[in-house]
Length: 361
Image (cartoon, rainbow, N blue to C red; front, side, top):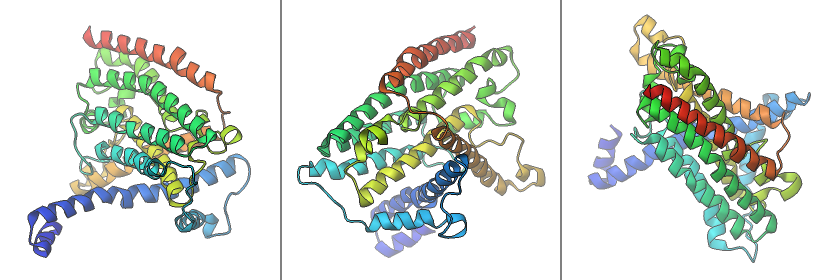
């Protein structure tokens, strides 16, 4: 209907295609990512407050729910400051590149059997590749700021993300070997039924190999969750932004809307990595107990239930990320690299071999 309206309006199907595609690509931003970021900032304030036996924001709205909205409005209105010695082109491009890398990852994430951005056969490979833009954007931000704290923070972040991508990819490869697909939608469909068909419990079916895979799957789940924490610079891996050492890391020199874009990208990344873990190990959008829509014969309810289950699972892991932030101390740089190169990568590699042998034999 919308497409026909655009054709009538412009009298040209090419323009209609471009505008319809643009609207479709922007829907996830305005319908999910922006509301989620606002909710996540509020949730983080409340989670941290209650963990420290205090209340958090309370004055603006009921329990302070308007505080985050007020902060966003303030950021949008703030003056855009660019220092004289900054590399202006890269300085302006960096937050855009970081946000695009975070936003593009949502294209391959299946929220339900119906709500999928793009059903890519190489969905896992695409997400790993496109999130590399975030690394480039962070390095651009640190270099262009002409600030030693920003440059040091960006170099730390690049080293950290590249290091922790290796165990992440090794765990993803183990899932690809078992499932035979790189499509997150297909992976979610394979885990249909009940919770015992999820890959964290060895995958679908009731075979001997399934039960032999359970310990390896649980280890893989822990490795990928720890690695994704490091990839989104969350505690205990938040040394690129270490306030006590680097002021605010690679976005020290940023203010106003550009800082808001870094902030939005960080929270978008938090949900994106949680969604990937859910799609790989916890059934994706599948319900652990079946669908109410099936029970009453209302098939139209099933995509809505799937979207709800997927969002709830993702939000749970976002909550765990916040929980860890206010529980664990920050690692030193040497401890962070040791965790990846001496522990996670060897364990992930051995785990990959074990899963390969079980799958083969």
